[in-house]
Length: 125
Image (cartoon, rainbow, N blue to C red; front, side, top):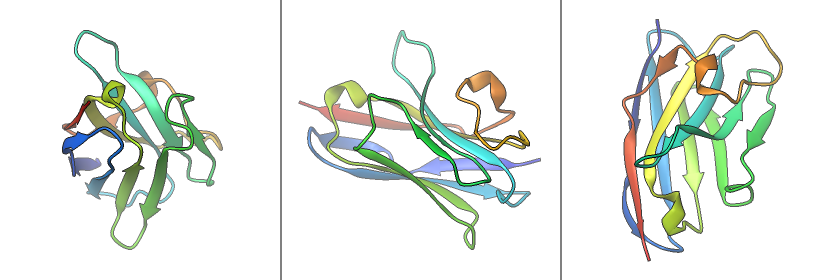
């Protein structure tokens, strides 16, 4: 079992930055594929980006060039650096992990068994 706890969300003006953290416990994230997802009110949960155990990283077109996923294996923590934030980035952000045994991580939420509780990001215009 993997437990995930996100932090770092908040209210920020457009153009600002936030660093979201996802602390894992129970198992090391080494060997797990991980992803960041977000869900805005009235919308389905969507992928923000993924990172596989092999190092492959994917970003949704809407965040490419602005968001960066990283891992700190020593701290067993996953990060999402968000820059140049826009009002349309407002959502609850979730981290997820799963031992998918694939070189490229799944982009669909259904591909992940372990989820954090979410952290709210609100971007004002």
